[in-house]
Length: 236
Ligand code: PXP
Image (tube, rainbow, N blue to C red; front, side, top):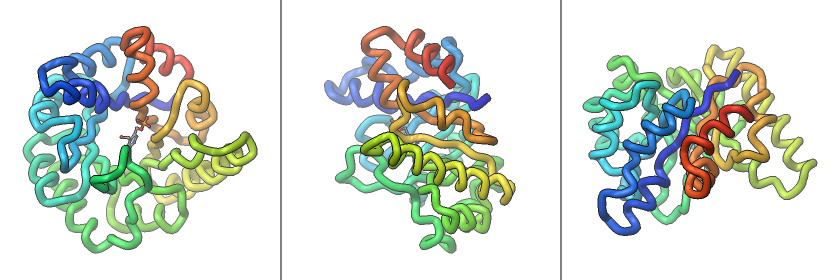
């Protein structure tokens, strides 16, 4: 069975709307874990639009499952990761003007830069996942630069215009997962997954963990974190 990593960024988005103390993503992480989440994910963006440094430092001490820190591979973020020591770092591309992470990290294009960052993090016993488009060449580069995991970008699948387009993209995701598995990489996936589209992705062979944020936090605002997480765990 695939595990569920709950991305709590949007609890921080609500907090930042007023710049106060509530709601606290640390509390959300506790509730998600109590409801059965297998991991907690938080993205510390360069512009600090939602998660703050303080959140990451407290989460590192309070998360009892595992903490997956999403970040761009900048010197500032690597320094924070080495200080915080999350279980896993997921490297994502970042553009200031985007609403959310729009595409996968261009691993092939940036192999040399990434390899050094990955060595540093691996030497400090942090697992490394690279958020990539489901493209075989990108997957090969992930293995080459020493990643332990890939996170397959499911945005194209989630935003498919019709059922046929979704099925086609699902086949692409399955092919990418198979390639990653053969190269010895562990497989995560995420982006745009929700209560209606998650199940076929959870069924992909060797899927380790699905990272899901927006749909869970949206539902949690209506029915509470406990029900929102439990419903997603049972679908997966
Ligand atoms: N995985 C990665 C690497 C992401 O950047 C995001 C969005 O922050 C997610 C998963 C979660 O996406 P969503 O909020 O659409 O579930």
